[in-house]
Image 1 (cartoon, rainbow, N blue to C red):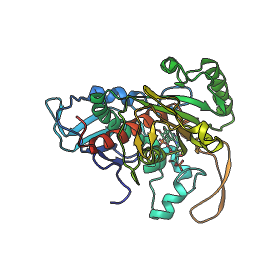
Image 2 (cartoon, rainbow, N blue to C red):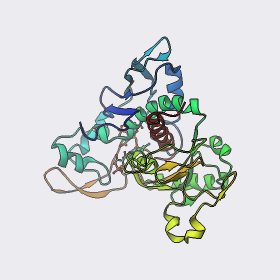
Image 3 (cartoon, protein in one colour):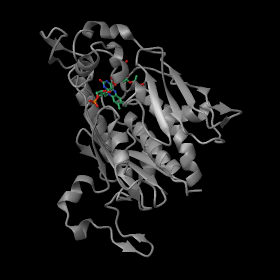
Length: 351
Ligand SMILES: Cc1cc2nc3c(=O)[nH]c(=O)nc-3n(C[C@H](O)[C@H](O)[C@H](O)COP(=O)(O)O)c2cc1C
Ligand SMILES: C=C(O[C@@H]1CC(C(=O)O)=C[C@@H](OP(=O)(O)O)[C@H]1O)C(=O)O
């Protein structure tokens, strides 16, 4: 089926709807012999799961992963791994009054246009509930990256236009709910989230992802360029509207002399390339930034239409995030891990 899976050597496909029985992922291409258990996957899922944080939805899901296949005696077997996560706290009734309305900014209108039928409960397949399955796959991908010593860190750069100025000390990131390294900016972000929530509105922001210790020489020279695949992986997450690599949009404002990362015997002088040149890693940190739009389901009344084209007003009840950040951070980390693992497994020469 076209468009339903991601990756070549390490391939994932997800399944399930937000208010269906379960969601999950099937992973193909994972090497045999890697130590894996549900606790390891749970640890990753806990960083994304709903029901926590000031900007997060109140929906309480345990997100308990059940490994259905592909492992034996605590090791991967090299066969397809299926991980299932049951939905335990879907409250579908809260969607009844908007069943025939299209939420502005969400996938209701386009799903109806494509399929002529849609599971309106919680956004169905378009709900970011699906991203839990990606995080489970990311935890498996990270096992491959661990063998190479590759680490991925993600932190919040901006929420609602408030930017973190101190972004160098990312070890601080675990110390607050918003996963932002600038505690002064965090206070302002928290106030902004509270204010916007009171108005029945929502916020977007920017997240930065850094992969370190990636060896030089990973990637493809055309089409499946490493930066192209990273951009696609990150852009495939709901609410992501733009992806930058390295200097990103600033590169177009520099001269060649300013933008080039000059090469010294012990490495590159700067990292405007974001660790990728000509689609192939150069050994420097891989740096990506993801621009996230505000959550579409808001209480504030908006104009819409119903399935018959009649003009209506909509105010979306239910348990929605105010901002996809910081829950999206873990999803970005997972997608970066999946892309890097996919490209590493394509390299026959790496030990
Ligand atoms: C982690 C995460 C949480 C999200 N939470 C919500 C939510 O609670 N309510 C909502 O309407 N949209 C939420 N979204 C955004 C929608 O899923 C997304 O906007 C929708 O699927 C439409 O896709 P698009 O924004 O890429 O066009 C969330 C997205 C992410 C990544
Ligand atoms: C449940 C999760 O997030 C959901 C993402 C989401 C959306 O429309 O994207 C809408 C809300 O849930 P529901 O589908 O019940 O309306 C969020 O709670 C989750 O991330 O696990």
